[in-house]
Image (tube, rainbow, N blue to C red; front, side, top):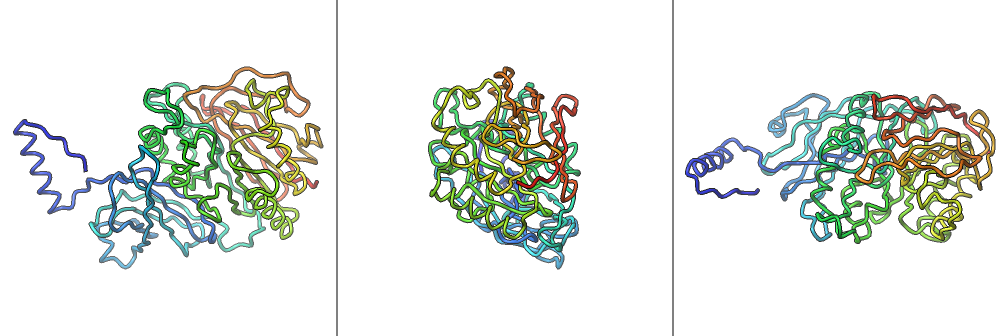
Length: 445
């Protein structure tokens, strides 16, 4: 608790009264911030709740119920359940808040749950939030059930409402939140890798990090918010802050890659910021995951995402086809063949601050059409809004580009229609307007 010392007797008396009242009525001084929901690696009927606090919580817990409740009454209520949370300490210089994370298990299908996080020892709790459980808990893993998810990358905190602010994306997502099953942020989160003077890169700025987490709380507290690391998410500490803040369903806590199934679709998140060459831990995991999924479901939808794209045409160093950067060439040579080998339908990325989509493409060759794809379709959605602004210049068009490109901020909507067709849309933040869309049939290649 921060105390402001003032010599004015009025403020001294007021502060004394507040302290006395807090002892009697348990006024909450600690503020639980950045409450985040994510899928788990355990089962479809579980969800993870993670939150940050500037204060140490002695008995971190998640309260939940299918009925709206008053957290203070949990000890005497038969309808309020409690799950003990784990405390995670930051080990990065300049980061002082703590992360708490807990599981809610044995959830019922398509049910609204109410929850609150806090300290069961002091009986101090956050406000009550809610989420709706997934609709495939009791269905076979390969049964496709229609749903919509939102996608964007490269979104950072800007104080105020400049056109590049994350505020517009968040505001628009809030307006359609009841239509979404989950949200995915494909790297570059908050842009907190600069110090206050904006000169010391990689130092990490906790104020910017926490301000961003607070700014997206209306989304993260009600919808699963899935992430993958970007190049702006490392503060010289091997992504320690990132992995402690964002509790993704990885096999090991130090991993930054994972997969999950949702309504009959298999999603794979890979890290372009970690080692991915053949025989590396990540490469071996990726191929094993792809192989196991295709063995059990040879015709299912398979969608992969990462921060850096394989194909992009904006005037940006990573996208320069004439600049044979060893890092990009290694990225493509190490991984693109796996997308073709295991029939990955769609690859979604950011890094490039623009929107564009490809035709079905492999090794720079167009292969098929959206109606009959013979290779992966690639979408770049680095359009969440950030202080670096958007890219508005383009290299000469490549055969694999679909023709439409945009420098507007906005977000993608992935609509799974059925087992044979999906729909992709790019929505600009300006008037929440549709800029691009295509329908993609399930291809076999």
